[in-house]
Image (cartoon, rainbow, N blue to C red; front, side):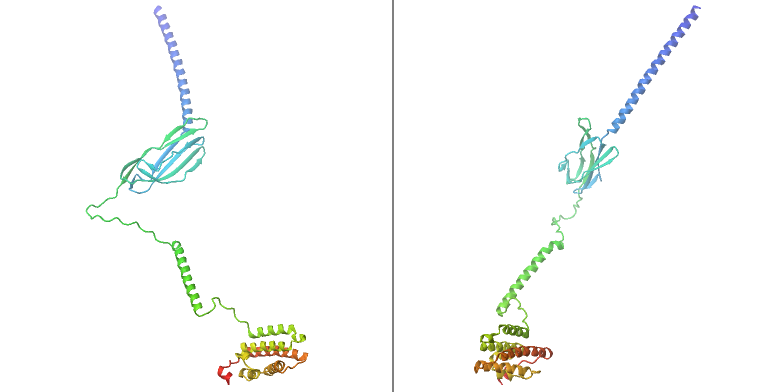
Length: 347
């Protein structure tokens, strides 16, 4: 009995101990679950705040002097501000040739910043594009953090030289082809210079011949000039002021100049009878010769015989002169008369 009781007591204690152990295990499991949950939440926040910087090149093998594109990218959340590194012109064995434009793209809560650098190397060997540090700050946190790109190994190959051949001289730099736009100013200068030379030659020849440098205006028709002068003389009405001799002298001078220009007869140097006896005047038709004869005869009487014509005769001489010019003008338009030669004039 005592033994059974002891066994029952030991069994109860064991059960109690087992029950406590189970309760202890259940409590630890809850803490592990809570810790795992907090870790997952923290990990999710860390992933949401993750900043990644990458660098890559188009090729890991180039020749001396070849251009190589270095692509830089930084991906970060929208609440993160990134400061790009200030790169010098040289980068541990590489020379920076060009700096591409900095671009930014946003997709949801992430931002992708990128840029392209053009680099080259002028020595052969193996070089490393060093890690490039990008500083960033999370909004609400003044702590500056740094993320770096991975280093990139680039092999620069030299130019193979055939040592079995003779050494050649260095070739001179190639001259670029000349375009038309570059030649245009010189062509214009040549044309202007040639024009100036021709102009100087033209002026010199004109002066040698005694000609005017500027072209003369075409002469007005003889009949227009004569009729204009006759109208002006008629408007003066000189015979009303007693200037009868002056009136007839000017009237016959206008007619004589008209005959010289129209018929080629030197009328200013001939007498009235000589003018009327020229072939050009004798061949006139329509009473033109008779009109001219009356004008010249009346003027000779006034100038040399002190004849005093009446007022109507003065006006008649003007009317005859105007009619003579108009009549001979129409005749000349239909059938030009030949000019008188010096031999015919002397005859």
